[in-house]
Image 1 (cartoon, one colour):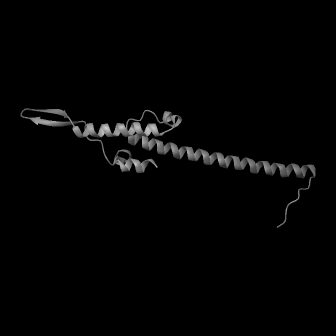
Image 2: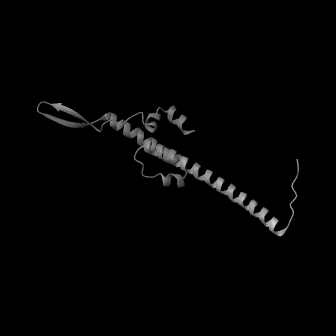
Length: 126
């Protein structure tokens, strides 16, 4: 849901890594010397990226944002957030499987207990 908004503002290149950061300084050659001057494209890129980075942090819940802090660019945050989601889904999937297996073992144990106690369990025949 967030990417369409980012695309609508033509900022998707920042998070997807297709809008690369230009050099911070440009060489200016004068007779006898070369000096570095600030690159206005870098300043524009940095400004847009940092605004996007702040906006992305503000769209996250505080517990997720706190786990993803210290990212310097919107691309770094975007990639880390995607990795976090995959990891969280894997954990949830493991938890579901674990709970299912526990229930299956419990049912198996109940069946063994019934057999040990000589209790006959009726099963519906279909």
